[in-house]
Image (cartoon, rainbow, N blue to C red; front, side, top):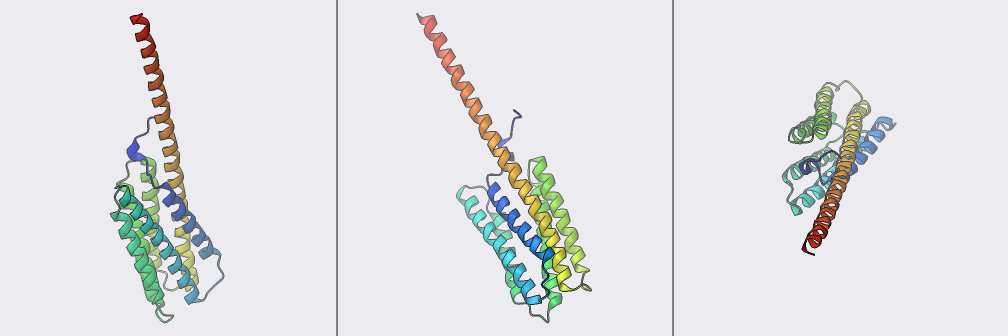
Length: 210
């Protein structure tokens, strides 16, 4: 079995599974919804971002308990909650502000994925997060130039990025879970081999003393 570096294993794979599933659900709803009412679409985005923020906050608490670096999760959770709150105060007469807020958030989210990807030691995880982050930055700048589109079309564009984010987080979570399983199996086999070796050594020592 290939040797696995413990530093490559993210112990919070379940967080990425939860976020990935949530992003996929929202992305699917945003892409295929027939709703065109501004207030409904804004509420949909706000609820989604607030849910992501809650998951990131719980992740930060868990990381703090386990001393695994909680600050990035807290910052991301604050940003998501702030954007969700700001969108709730956007009136139907301020559609432009909604475009700007979500576009800026998408770019920030993409940059955070890139930064976290660059600090990741595992090459697969690094590739997943950086690729997803680049997609976020690109989509964010595209959103800035979609002012001529109806708000429903714009939400579909944002939903498409959320699908990408959801898929990448699911892959990230599954990959790290498989690493965790392989690592513990390798540790178990190594411990078993050491125990058997110690037992053989003990038997050999007893034979020599007889």
